[in-house]
Amino acid sequence: MKITLPAMKLLYFIALLYLLPACSRNEGKSYQDIVRPVRVRTVALPGALDKVYTGIVAAEEFSDLAFKVGGPLVEMNIDAGETVRKGTLLAAIDPTDYQLQNDGNKAAYITARSRLERDRRLLEMQAISQQEFEMSEAGYIQSRSAYRASEKALSDTRLYAPFDGFIEQKYVENYQKVQPGERIVRLVNPDKLTVWFVLPETSVGLTREQMQVTVEFDIYRGLRFQARVQEFVDASPGGAGIPVRLILDDSLFDKTKYPVYPGFSVRVNLRTDNRIADHYVVPLSAVFMDPLTERTAVWRYHPENSTVTALPVTIGSLFGSDNVLITKGLQDGDVIVVDGMNFITEGQKVDVLTTELTVF
Image 1 (cartoon, rainbow, N blue to C red):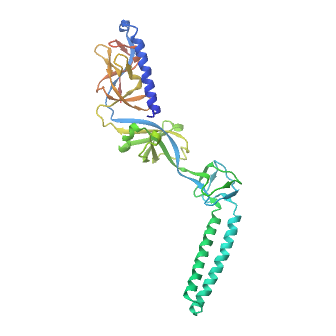
Image 2: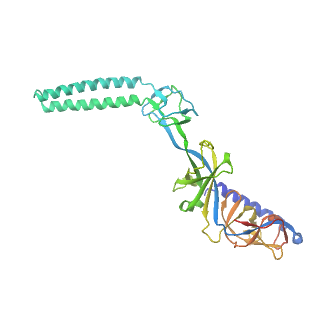
Image 3: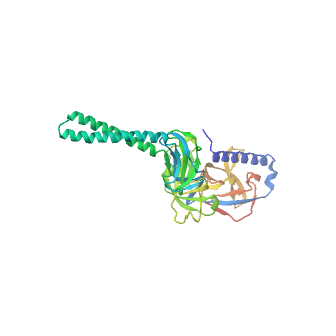
């Protein structure tokens, strides 16, 4: 099973917290007489759950352009990063052979057309049979098709931009011989953007729920723009997660005011209603591995006597970079230690440094 980066981070964090409390407990009961400073928070059910993922800006409209015919390139005067307009000539193949073929087919077509017109008059005068006329008509149709095909092939020796955009990548160089269908350039429309991110397999249920989606560009921190899910893949290619594509539909997003381009990094925030009655989100700093029970736990603070006790909990997925979902063990109103927990022991008295804050 492939371990994702967030999962590795969580395992590393828990392993580190496992060692620190063990060191403190091995010192003996003298720690019970020391009042340790800590910070605490009161847990409560969140009205909504937020998850943050890293995404990337991509072009919604792009095309890898190629010739339908092959031959040596004789014209290619564009470079990667160059902006082009629709209809701009991007590249051309040597048309000599195609021109000769087209000229020959054109001559054969003109001859067959003249013969057909002559035979039609002869048929009206009953100078030829119906069979002879039909053979003349078939020859005309065949020559017309060959002429049209060669005319199309000649036209295909020139490659034009199908829309306004810029050349993101150039795959070949001038005077190189190319094959039919071989990629020549990638043309990207920078005005039609989308955002891609990968949803972990453990969060696949989010694709079936109503959620608010916002994106925050790394170069415009603090600004969140509304987005919506346009499509996602019902599969996890290579076990890496589920690719999801977003479309920006925020009227406040003005590309002239906030210029972004394919390849820019973004933070994707998914907010869903908390439909699970006993799930809480707490800071990662509040969770540790109890060396006595070998279970994941938090320190529960008892305000009546200013002491703490270990409370076993079950953890779920990561939320953002510094929070974790607790699926079992906590209740509304529990006060837990969120800072200073590595230097306290079971039943030890603590000194609360700050006013209690509610965990959402």
